[in-house]
Length: 127
Image: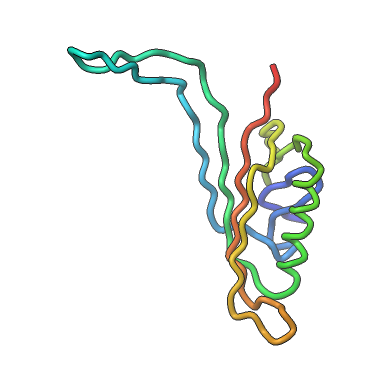
């Protein structure tokens, strides 16, 4: 079974009809500016911040609604989860900070025909 990414036991990929179409990864270098009254700001190293990932996609029908419920159940556990990509690279532990869905073309029984969604993750470190 092919997958794009596995978060805990949740699989992102076409095999589960829940593939992402975009991934944004942000790394913080730990630099801060200290304002100086009579000159340019001074650069100061405050320590590297946590990496963040924003994974997003567009999914269809009630199956997508179910997948988002699975992600919400993982989020409700409030524990860090291992993240592994499709080539087997272990990205370490991550926490689910935010889960957003935008339902459209909702039919009479409440099923969304199209769901745009994003999952925001932050690196988990307690070292």
